[in-house]
Length: 426
Image (tube, rainbow, N blue to C red; front, side, top):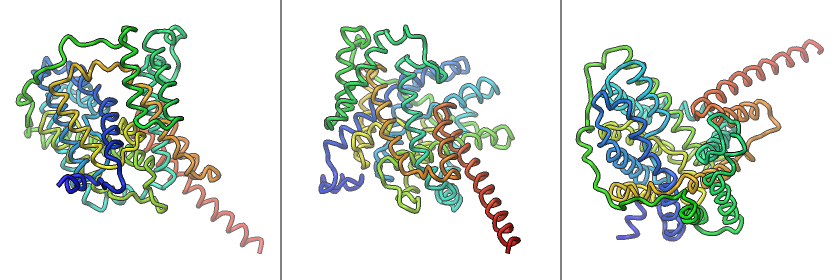
């Protein structure tokens, strides 16, 4: 019975390690749990519109748990899902604050976008979009996401400013920054010594050392009862379906969701070494379908677009390869409904070093890019560069694709010109 249940998540007792998958899931969850505290803060401007902020924490945890369960049992991959930060900002700041639409309008747009994403998963268009991405760019996605997640780690530590410029030197001697640097050294040492669960051990060590430093603050209570998510559930407004602005919002969300998911998944899969020589990725349809289902279920719960998190790279770096890792993440989100103060007490200084090391693991696939061919290496370089600089995975993907198409056209044109010159000489 146990083996049968594990096999439903792609786990094989002869190939995979139960301990490794559990540690992988715990590591991924700890680096993702910040979203539970961040979501209510991001949606606070909508409180004046009657948005039930108190229910959002519960809705976020359940949406993350349900979405990650889809990934565990349908795709059988070790990726965690939760409401995405980019589309959170678009939902709140652009649709509701700037354009002035009610939050029910934006929530309906998320639902429709998710349904379109499901249709896209089973159409030829999904395969066309995936196959038009050359193999070199797929590896560039992974390397770019590596820099992107490492940049997030440095920003969270306080060492790096909002741009790509270091803050003043005094920020290097603050307690959180010094603890971050210490954690980076400790986790790097664990990686060198190949300590099993090194990333998770690093988080725990830095968290404990942070107690006397005043960085880790213990909560007054470790147990809390979640508020009901009912006020947010299925709050859709279908009267906007025929308005032009509604469909502009839907298509914008769909674009970001598809390309963010594509880039993240391809990057994570490249890190696991499963990309075939022809550039194909096994079970890609199931992965994208899980992501799309998560968006629809998240909308029904009252959340913005649910997507695959780049923080899953930390679990992949720990050796997670099956849906069991995702199942552990899902289980932790359910537990967090009651133990939220305990999980939220883990300081950013403890999780930020793990994100930097995970970025290092992802960047390793750059060796598969053919650097001697500028028509492949230049688009790959721009993709890798622009993801962390712009703070957007989608921007890096689009820049790389357009550059690749342009350089391929120029290369083909130059080849035809050389061929004509050769014939003329004859």
